[in-house]
Structure formats: structure tokens, C-alpha cells
Amino acid sequence: MLKVWGRRSSFNVQKVMWLIGELGLAHEHIDAGGSFGGLDTPDFLAMNPHGRVPVIRDGDATIWESHAILRYLAARHGAGPFWSGDTAVRAVVDGWMDWSQTALQPDFLNGVFWGFYRTPEEKRNWPAINAALARCAGHFAKLDRLLEGRPFLLGDALSLADITAGVSLYRYFELEIERPVLPQVERWYHALQQRPAYREHVMIPFGELRGRLAY
Image 1 (cartoon, rainbow, N blue to C red):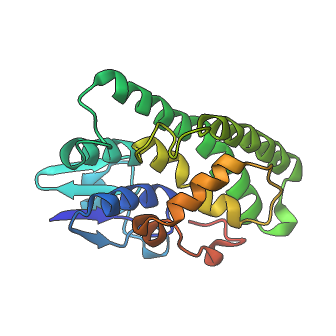
Image 2: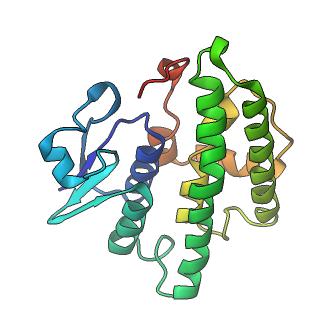
């Protein structure tokens, strides 16, 4: 059976669990990281020398890094909307996945979520937070334009592009921050909220993380 190591509140673990839920894959989830610890044990480091979650084991295959895991699971189990036989189609998905990881995620997760929510109020760097909020507004404005006339980022079906970008939406819309008017993104977010896998694996309360800088 597929095994997944990670804590449910981990942003990157949520991406993997959301796809597993969409694919309906039987799996065993093993709590690791954060308050669960276990990332510095010899057994875990033998799976991922970087000591980070998520990690999956599928038969003889052990894979780490969330986007590598998403591509593996899509290729192995998600033929159709999640894995096209057309390399050009896959390249478009890859482009948006990489953009999510290198632009949206650093600005939202590190700049806003960590800078604002996970940092104690007296330690917040407001100029840096406001700069990250402005960059996030620009990122989500791009998605708003992309979503014009289509239900999901790349067309009529949910794709890995939606998973890697859409995992941010629950926290983005739950935080007490200023947000621009984003009608298409809000419509997209509402559609994602109707999906059982999104509700189960992404819409997880995160109140215990407020003002807590430690993993």
C-alpha cells in the first residue's frame, strides 16, 4: 500500500494528500515532522537525506519533494486529466506548477503566512509583509485573468496546476489581510471547496500555528 509521511498541516503535504484524495488511492498516512518529529532518524534520512516531508513509498519506489511526488502519482495513477500523453500539454502544466513553487508559494507561504500569521505580532516586519501581499495580489491577478471563461486554470478539468496553486487559497482567504477583488479566483476557490478531497486535505484549521515560528 502507498505510504505517505508528513503532518496534515504542512502546505506541501496537503498538495500530495489532495491528489491522493482526487485519485481515490488507498494509502497509509504516517505523521512526521513538526511536533511529531522523526525527520532526523536514520530510517527517515535513508528515505529523504534532506529530512523533509512529504515522502511517499509506493512499492519499491521512494519519492520526496512534493512536486516530484505529484508528477509520479499522476503518471502512475492519473492518466487523463492529471497526466497527458501529449508532452506539449504536460509542459504547460509543468510551467504553472513551477511558477506556483517559485513565485506564488514563496511570496504567500514565506512572505505572508509566515511573516504575518506565524510570526508573533511584536516581531512582524510590516514593510516585508506588505511587499509580499502586493506581490501575491499580482500573482492572483494573473490567475484571475487565466480563469476567464474556464472553470479551472487550464480548462474544463482539474489539473496539477490547480493543485499546486489552489492549495494556497484556503489560507489566503481565511487570513485577516487585505485582498484585491478577484471574482474569477473566488469562483474557482468556491468550486474547489465543493470537492471532497479539497475539504478533507486542504481545509484544515491552522489556529495552532498562529504566532509559532517553530516547525
